[in-house]
Amino acid sequence: MKSSPSSSSVGLMKALAIFGAVVLFLLFALSISLTLRTARRAVSLPPETVAPSAERVGAIGNGLLGELGSVCGGEKRLPCRPGTMCSVEMDGEMQGICIKEQVVLAPLAQFGEACGGSLPFCSPGLFCRKDASRGSELFCAKLNENAPFIVSLKLEGMTPEAGIYHAPAGTKVRLVIQATNAERVAVLLDGKSLGEAKKDVGGKFVADFVVEIDLDAELRVTAFQKEEFSSLAVKVVADT
Image (cartoon, rainbow, N blue to C red):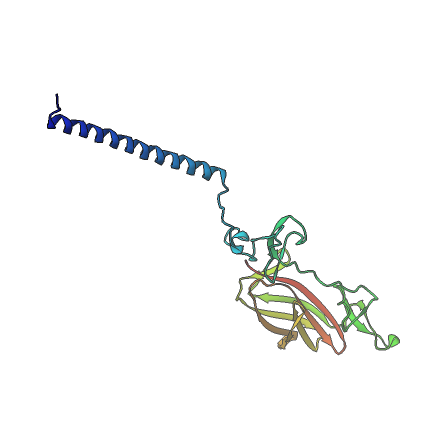
């Protein structure tokens, strides 16, 4: 007996339905497999598989490579920019942080030691004195009533804290120096001359300078009477 056209159509539709269901199941299974594989790979790989840029490697907080607070040293010997230094030795494997360069005050000459020229300044309470018995040699002697002497040093615009004067970068600072027996007063900032202070009334001398970014230096004023002199130094820094 031959099948009727209607029964053949029903059989074809059933076959197509079964085939479609199989295709959908395979697609669903493939999707699940790919999802699980991706998840396993994300767990097994480090968070960032592409090598980060040098700027990102050295960054910590808001600083970029070489800036204050950024990572330095280590196996890659990450550098710090000029004016800063790494808190660890750069030839080691440890990582450190970029910090401000530490100012090391110059050694001072003691009582009876030679001074003047390129020699060290005399310690506080002493002045560099000329003595005829020593020819042209100057030496550190105790202060007396004839010695050039800095009575006080005021830094207008800066705030003293723990023996260090600080102010925001860009601040204009006025030095007011009170001195006795002084013909002139010279000013050094980080070993560089700022010239001579302007002589004012009442034994006062004044000078100005601007706080630069990352300032961390020794400010030294020196009162002269001919070749003889005495000096006073303070540390000045810019606020970070």
